[in-house]
Length: 271
Image 1 (cartoon, rainbow, N blue to C red):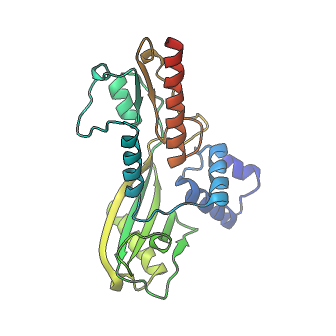
Image 2 (cartoon, rainbow, N blue to C red):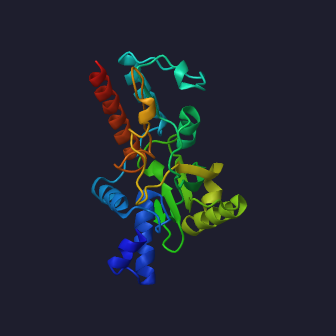
């Protein structure tokens, strides 16, 4: 991505900072020296074209809805059942929808090393919104953002507001105390009276956005485990770190569809 910016003469400091802001808002990535330009540009184009969706009552509604739909189709969802070996699973096809470390542990097959992406989040539950601040703000000179997600979706009791102040961390760990102080300072800059309205604060110092940022080296595909896909057993992978298409939730869904098609093809070929 950095080379792409250089080729397009986006080198003036303020122009470069603005471009980096647009990139990290869309991709959550700040490591432009390793971020794949084609993947990042497609992600930015998608964000500009379709924007994003905010869900009433949060992501849990999507999880619950997906589980209900799966059960209606006859899926048996089992929780709290650890799997230490794949040969203990009675199935003709297995999709490992876990991180690369867990895939390596279960299969014994080494995977290409990936660059994980992290961020820190300061979540503010307010009992009202001060009238002297915006709903959204993006820092240009620092990897910070401020967003009142409850302005777009129902995320709390009537009259309440849910504010997220976050810092894009990249792959390098940072001192959590300093990060929290920086986020609180930025919240005060954007919304000076936020403390007067705050009912609850949650600080999450190191959230993993994705275990593998897309780089020019490409992410592993769903058919990376050929030695385990033979006979009646077909094993594949899915996740936001898998496959060439999309980033974040888009990559998770695209790789899941590819994994399902992979198993279908192998099953048909063995029939």
